[in-house]
Length: 88
Image 1: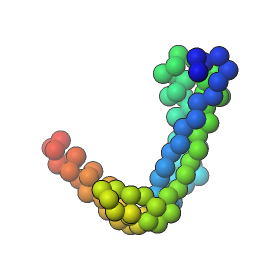
Image 2: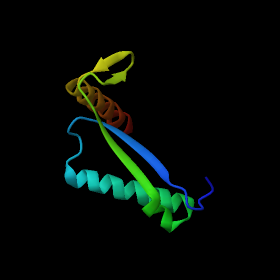
Image 3: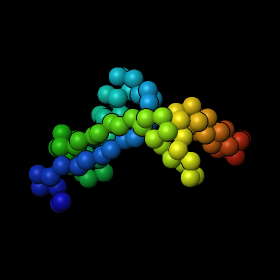
């Protein structure tokens, strides 16, 4: 696509329940705006389609293991703690 009427499609995959309605609206708007800004085409925001998908428990594999939502949250928190410790 060269921006002459095409669409951009983005898929966002989260664990179940990660985004409440306000967060869904914010993520979609922010991604559409980011794409338009990166392309230098403000009209592209209106042609950006965002698919929000929630992984079912066990439907998100990391490091060879199908994780439940609780395992995924625990893994993410551990990584965030590592990042924070490295920046301290």
